[in-house]
Image (cartoon, rainbow, N blue to C red; front, side, top):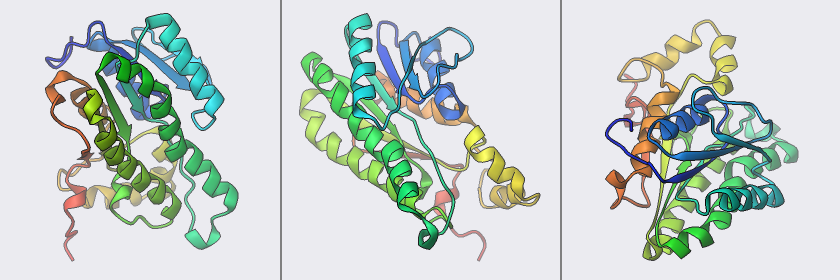
Length: 249
């Protein structure tokens, strides 16, 4: 058990859980006692107590259906679904190609839809479930050279609200966590490309530090637990206060 949360006997499926925020989420769920299955394009192992790692592409329906079927065959249920897989290609909207669009939409948005559709019947049968989708501060804030990424994350936020409305009567909560700038393999190159960029980001954050994967994992753990049993359709932004604005104009 961790942080007062006991998920013993619960089965969690984490889409994209072998690196960065996803890896931290897997670790926290394992520490809380859950059985965890994660899916990634490669079958890398995560440290600590070992999850079941399945290979698959979250943007391909056949892969997602197979992962969910395998999880149900092995554990009999899926109590918690975390949609954490995400990609980004930074470029102006005017230079974004159709291939860029398809790549980000398939992973960031379509992948969330496919996973929710696949686990929905099992959760409805048991009359309970926790779904947590990872969005971004870019769902609400415009970010330079990340127009398509922001659009996909805004879509995740709206899909979260609509699913909460549709599936609430079945005992399923659907929420989202919106990370601010977080130090992960996905952001490391961007932060290190310009010597002053890290400090520029920090100066925009009231808590004066970048996010850590475990900051996001703690929020997911809360929303996946019974502590959040009466919370649904919400996005919890974990951004150190960045989204409150101002930036000393």
